[in-house]
Image (cartoon, rainbow, N blue to C red; front, side):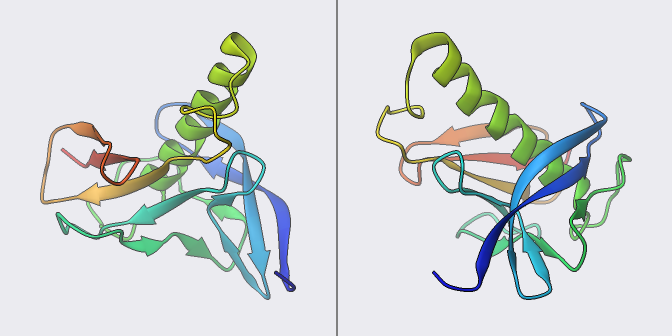
Length: 135
């Protein structure tokens, strides 16, 4: 698609510190979409418990502050999820020679800010996605 370019952003995560994130740029907006790893995308559920959410985007290519926040718009959790997805893709590629979890070149997606104070995370095969609460 014309107008969307790959970019290298920065994630300021809570658990891994400052990390590089593959992102895309569309106009003046950067999105947490990793086209180098099966098109993985990170979405914000904004405390909802269903649906895909809103694609995490920013006017700068820096996501998160590296600190925990009670705000459902905070991008630190999104940076952690995107980085974790990158590391998972690379693990399957480098350890097993697989092109993604299912070896079909398709990246799972991530959803952050699930529910209100949800103290867990879970895999949902029906959406082929990983979901993270804030508790």
